[in-house]
Length: 285
Image 1 (cartoon, rainbow, N blue to C red):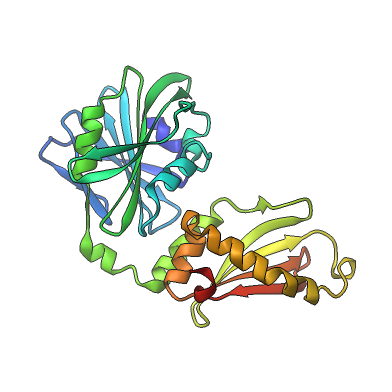
Image 2 (image 1 turned 120 degrees about the horizontal axis):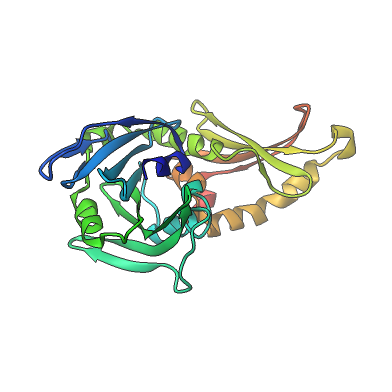
């Protein structure tokens, strides 16, 4: 099952490492984790430098546990839902989930949300669970898959063993946190918004403390005429909607928490700017 991680949302390459004893810990940078006997860690090199992840795989390739850390806090139930049922994680997009949905778990002093899953990956029938929890200022998404039944006790021990590196977290100043959430958003672009609008880019201006989503509209500037009043009329309604959905979206939470304005630039395909919208941190809280 070493190929499971090739479907992981931000994976570009795997670096295989030697097997470790149960007493060994594997340091991923942002955090470390105990490696159970019979497992080997594989560091996952991602296209988002700030996202640290590792895959623990049994030597017989029958069980794998993937750990992904986001360097900011989030709602564990919402993040878990988005990464699984919501289809945000390509590794799990074809999985089947129970009708009961997300449940809560408590592993010692660690608690969060979990969901069972099953399906076919690389032609193999697998079952397992996905978990999400917050600790040390990070949100962790973990999923465990097996061909002969997941060892949930091992899942528990792995999750309980995760420790955030406080020194590494101290390096995440406002700029790095905003850059990280922007890099994450760019992974899935372009995204169609409606029949004429496509979300094409995310720009960060640290000098002006702005994070701007670029929306490209079909047609030319002449097709839209003077739309300044239209954009002005959209402001209050969009502000209310963004505020209402703040908890579910790191693109709203992280910039506003760091004192950045969230903006929208509407352009045509030839780059002509049609209009802008800007929302201050105060409007989003």
